[in-house]
Image 1 (cartoon, rainbow, N blue to C red):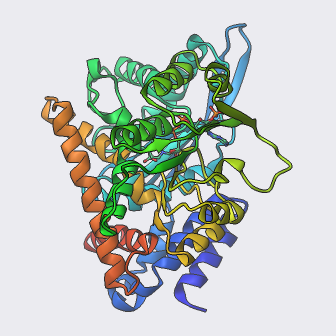
Image 2: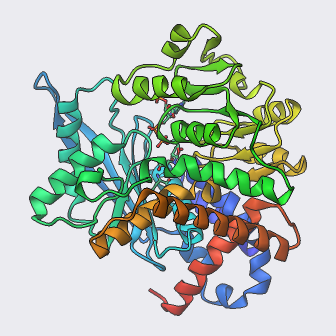
Length: 452
Ligand code: NDP
Ligand code: 2IT
């Protein structure tokens, strides 16, 4: 058995039931196979086995009190994955599905993603099985305070800098930071995604979605094409989906779908600025369901989730591009085939690991321009890195400055992934290029640091 296959089997045996973690490790490790021959020094120092094991996984109890006085207990997680190139960095996810395997898959991906950003950030991820949906602001605040009551002792601006992810946006970061400040008596850049009034960066809320669109534009540019006039399927309706739509509209493309966990809307005429404003207010202020979009705009069709289907009808519309921006494994093999059959030529992943391994193979076989999450959605954490820089410098950059830097970083990530895929004999295989480019930098730093 090869070193890589052997290692993947070992990871599965040692971490039973962590299926998303197995999937992420297998996907990355298999593409690192050609590095084994080129880098005997990595083999000698056993970098491959060391990089799949997190530095530490912190699990804690989060008790909180609801508005009626009932006491609830949630699980809390922070996986500090790898510190070779910078402090641990990565988001917090609050969603009922959260478990250790999901946090580990996200933390593992984050190591390579952060390496690709060109900024000095290690990888980490955290979260809780708390469900913010249907909770009052006071309940969310008390939960965030309870969560930070334990998390504070593990994080710090030079140690570990969390941010948002699913279920954690500006409101939650505000409560988390407020409580950290109170108990530490310190105002530092310990979290990113902060509000502008208290140390946040312009463009951070927009950065993941904008970045995914910039990455798609870069991939198209290699073929001498642009996004102008192209139609787009977008899933999700949260932070990433909203700003993906915004940038698509800015660049003259036409987003036609949005979704949440209850269903999706298809608006053949396109989601324009006014309709997007409605969707943003619906999701961010009223915290309602995407179904209401079709109640407001009669040209749009709402389709509820049908659990008996083995495919997602959102991916079965004619379109030029697709931007999965909801969650992991939302595009299976059948969805990937439907996308290809409907004319989709570009897939840029706003979400983390939204495509199953079988789906990825379809995209690679059909030579789709396929930007994997760790490259395409790295704009969010990249601007988090810029927020850390601004906090350290105690100044703030203008919108234009941050956007320019974000565009430069997305170009650099595209170039690194593309050039690396070429150097390894498969030009345009972005997952291959992104995994190897992200890995080699971290591996060299680990090598330099000795066995620690
Ligand atoms: P939000 O919480 O703002 O939005 C998530 C959206 O996805 C919601 O519309 C939600 O619907 C839907 N969704 C979540 N879980 C599921 C599920 N299990 N099934 C169906 N729909 C679901 O999160 P973000 O927009 O921040 O995150 C979206 C994706 O992007 C995630 O994969 C995240 O890891 C990734 N990402 C986020 C970054 C960021 O900066 N925020 C950076 C890089 C990647 P509902 O409201 O019904 O739950
Ligand atoms: O998956 C991700 O890259 C994020 N959720 C953003 C992490 C961050 O630290 O900004």
